[in-house]
Image (tube, rainbow, N blue to C red; front, side, top):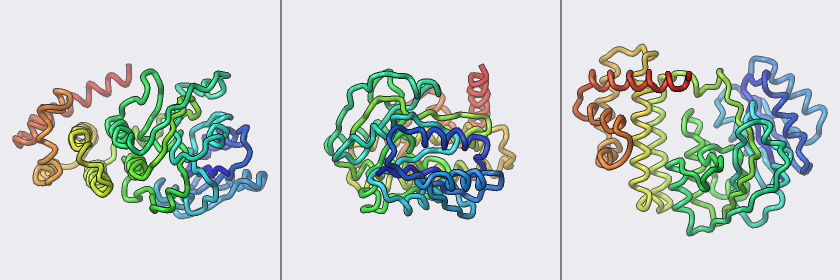
Length: 342
């Protein structure tokens, strides 16, 4: 049996489509666990209606605690061999669960995202799968860390917890769960921890999952908590890699990615035009960052890796030229915003 976990918070606008896509699966031996995370719109009523119509659907309601806590609550209720995560505004293909069910003796299954909703139902032969063993885990972790493609021209999103199937026994054996204290990067941390435990992994380059990007997605909003969230994420990622003995071969990749994320948070949070913090508060965060061991170590890689804008921005912060750093960050923010609108 396959356990499909869907956390829902105020998802009434999209939930019907999502649930219908799961229930249209050609493979029928699954349970659908809906976790209503304190919704205040019509989400709970929709969940109750679907649960009353199909015995495979189980509904759990909790006070609002965030997507990580909701997924964790769903994990405690899972009874299937495989666990699949679906977001409430997304769609899956009719053959997704069937492709999972035919695999044996694997710990992790990876699939492609569809570029359009129509691609989910396109009648195409399933491409040949690629199999990975324990010795490939460092390279898989590098692919995850740096967001590299496993195959050119494909659409695998290694960071996301969606479009994947996790062996539940491994999740339970090592107590692998999402970090509720993170609102950004929790999927990356979850997948990193899971990969460090994997013995066998298979990549099936079939487009089985459509991510419905819409204007009210949380990723489109400025969040003042991002800088502190990022620091926690980097610390937890490093601890996970060190505990598994995987940090040494990935040290350069980890710190290169850390620098990318640090420059990202400078552009989109600390010096973002929407940030109403005072100049002194922004400078204090930069000073705290400069004093951190993680930042000091990562800066050793700044000259040899990454884009010139990132190198320059972090170099200006290192020199404590905060006005110049803020100016460059705002210029880069404006350029990236302009590119998105084109």
